[in-house]
Amino acid sequence: MFQRHLETLPREIIEKVQLERLKRTIRRIKERNRIYWEKIGKVVPEDVKSLDDLKRLPFLTKDDLRKGYPFGFACGEQKDFVRFHMSSGTTGTPVVNPYTSADVDQWGEIMARCLAAAGLTFSDVLQITPSFGLFNGGFGFHYGAEKIGCFVVPIGPGRTLLQLKFFKDFNTTALAGIASYPLRIIEVAKEEGFDFSETSLKVGIFGAEVWSEEMRRYIEKEMGIEAFDIIGMTETGGVGLGIECNYHNGIHVWEDHYIVEIIDPETGYVLPDGEEGEMVVTTLTREGLPLIRYRTRDITRIVSRERCECGRTHLKVARIKGRTDDMLKVKGVCFYPRQVEEIVMKYPEILPDYQIIIGKVEGKDTIKLIIESEKQDEYLKERIEEEIYSTLGLHIKVTLKKKGEIPRAPGKAVRVKKEI
Ligand SMILES: [Zn+2]
Image (cartoon, rainbow, N blue to C red):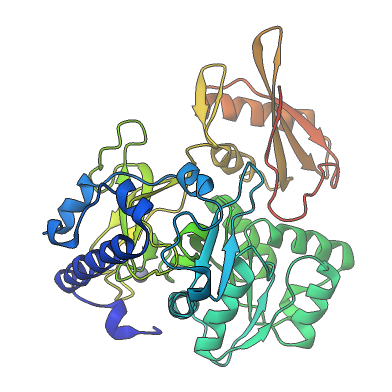
């Protein structure tokens, strides 16, 4: 562990720390941003007597933050900040998160905990494939790696042939990336006859996209590594909100830095542990953009608040199932793309790239699933159609294509296309 004492705090102490830091965060908003303070109902720290009082505060949404572009919710002035990161903004105005130097330090700390949870030490070599720029991924891994003192290969995204060469030339032991990028690496490696067993790779840390257990098994088998799921987003201060430990039975969220609630996305009520709903995050140590009850739109549940087999006491949430806005409703059936992925990936003949195409013909929903296989097997197609119907209750038309026919997107994979 990077900070054994803090990562194994007894629950009563964690909750005491959370209450004190929640009050401090509210005070910061009250003193530094009047509009934000009004938005949270002009609550004063003295009003917050227990963590339960958090439930009375209003939610903050991505739309709120967008409307505040660039510094509407920032607590401080530009001169107090050292940099910003920004959400990709593919679906509208981006969200800007300004960092104070203390925020950069906080980020390094939680990322160092994440890297240590994935088994990294100073003797490791971490190849960082997320970009270094407005997207938070590259820098997040970099700061964590600096804190644990491992060797960084700051290559960034793309140039997959060079990635393969560097695995060997720099004895890379750990790979960090967006969850769909290892698929590209594996694909290019196969074309080039590259053998992962000739490298020192043993760990992969992947996030920023929803990826299934089946996808994990594929990556682990092909690359000969242990893969860890990491979470975090621009709004919470970047990657590193939480990560799996080597028991892989949930994602630890660093509770001395964040409070997590799971709510019913329709009613907004907090759900009991174990029930699936939308994750809401309150930050406790962020300065530039502190969050009070931010609706992440990620669907998960609380797995456990008990001490984990790894010794950590910070709660665990399930791997993200989808986002409230990724849920698809076709022919009256609601489902997440990940559920289709889980079915498709069970078939070893099927390659891991897939695309769901949704449209409308004469007012009726249509849905197609495009998959790739080396073999053009009609029987296989039917089996997949039947399995999707028996699992999701959805009639879906499967189209089998040859390897490489589904367009590969730079950055995040495009799994769903709407032709409406
Ligand atoms: Zn654990």
